[in-house]
Length: 326
Image (cartoon, rainbow, N blue to C red; front, side, top):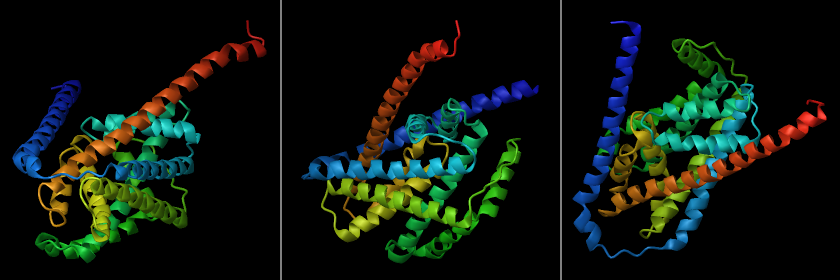
């Protein structure tokens, strides 16, 4: 078999695996709702829509904090993007996350940033750096909470492991990160990069990501409050649940935007906090909640990018005349 045939076969297998993962994720969601349908109908729901607007605002604010940190990381690697263009790149690429395999968002960002003269390798490296730091911050936040306050029997069994997870922050030292990223780039047959960030700058980025997790987690807690009464203690737990479910869902890689996995983790972690089927409702609502903000952000990004393109096309003839071109 030739290399081209091997590559084609691998491509077909990857497409099949991604399709199966998507089908299984959707089947899980349908089965989840079906299994608790009677309980869902029996509950006397008391929705509090007043909590929804601030929950959306906190989620959007957390995303903007993440966007700003990523732009800073990109700049440190030599890639310059105006905030407006960086926001367009960020939110437009979010849409392709629903294709199984998280690599598609990275590729989308690389192509969009390339329109502004940023090399694809630089964008790819900045996104990997962004994901490593964001996941490290989210995993640490969730692990520390559940190590201290986790009440389930299975959490007690893995408590020693939870205390070890924050040690992963040591891998965020500039030299260690650079070595790990360059090993990844070598596997991809790409040239090495140099991380010029200082330890203090990386620590500041980690704190920024921690703030983003707190903001989005607080938004998640307010979303839950719109569905069922939430105490302060439950609200703090909801922040940790959001971070844990999001990180685990992302690390599954194969499912589109952690579909099914994120919801399953949420339901498992929310079970000690709320009676069934409320954890299921919160988990499914959280998916729609996040998608709504991402779609609105992408729509705004698409409109502003289209206007920027039209303005550039309109100004091109005038610039040509000023330059004396025929």
